[in-house]
Length: 401
Length: 184
Image 1 (cartoon, helix red, strand yellow):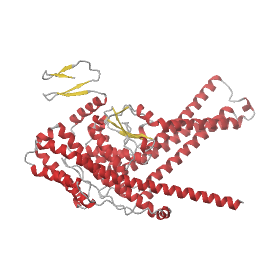
Image 2 (cartoon, chains in turn cyan, green):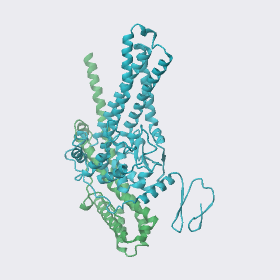
Image 3 (cartoon, one colour):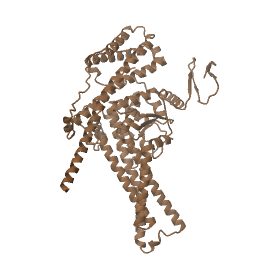
């Protein structure tokens, strides 16, 4: 059943190896081109390996903090949103994780979520205020289950490390292009020895340019295509944990229905989110970080007979007319996983109500105090409010702060 | 000489493989035990929650004496149970009584407007979910463990050190078989 983890780990190692090899190859070519000989090529490999190692260590021990900080996520305590904490604990229990992930809220009205960390012991889940305001309990459970699945499948480590590798390759090729630019500007020869074998030198130079252009492109395609597959797997895992595909489907519909982009997301963090945080680009292409959200919803809606990996695989084949997405070793033909009923009395959340809730959550995260007044109004005081008493603007009662 | 070295290397590899499998089995067995104790933790949490819930709701729900009695009775039965069969029967009754309680809450709009009760309601929903998910998680873990001790080559190590198959958690009540949802 959880063989999927092993498949995922193996793929991660293969991809990391490929990335490392690409990095070394690029380093060699760059050294060769600039230093003018195989000796300089070896130095290039050495430097590339150093960059690789440093990036690896940084991403392993500080990657999650870097990503959380760059997404402007704040760690929160239970009283900010008890339901969120309850749901995360429920999913932690269902997944048999050794420890509950740390919980962060991002002050952004666009609904989205991501998970990061090194392993299940050092994992974090971040959700936006918009997500908490717009979803009902079952839908929020679906989203959290999706993130917990990423933790369970060790996707979090993979995405962090692969993202850092991608950054390193892009960095090296940038250095190369700048180096070229400046040496062309200064009118310097590449090497004093190059006069003898000018033809070979030029050939190496062209190869180096091609490599420098292709390597980041190739790395990006690989990184993004794998992160797409991981989204399907995390969807399947979420359904297996909650036994309720409609919850996640409803959540994805609401996420797809919003047309605001996230301000706190960037190109490197985009593949981490449950759905693409950027709006406007509809076309599915090689660089898409996420599978089309409509397709994911249709797969989930098609699941009517069970919540196992096999059922997800069948729904996937039925909707996309492609081969299955679940590794064959994870699909047990005799696995029986029943569905459960949803919360029938769940009220649809009105846009006005959800808008107000989003604001309240953002204020709570920012340390606002709430004072309920007897007239039904709720006073919201900013953390830098100094005065000791405050007057209700509607009924003129005074309250102690 | 080369023969001896090869034999030694093969031996060392076998020992490493053996130790690896043994440790994996122990880890899995511990995870199964841990998942089992998680069910108990959640059941106890439900017991602790009930007095508070009954106290808050009693003032509003004056016509539901019978429902409260059923809840309190099932709770004390479950807490005083001596055998597993007795306990699981009482817990089943408690689940039933609580879901009935949550149905009649619908008739008391004043109670549903009470902030204190709303937060209790969320805690109760979550506790019921946690019980169900703890059972589900236990069964998943047992499936994984049982698969491991039946598959080659780990079945050899399992046989040597007496790793035995574990039973699934079965729910007697047919209605409770799906994850129970408390309806509000």
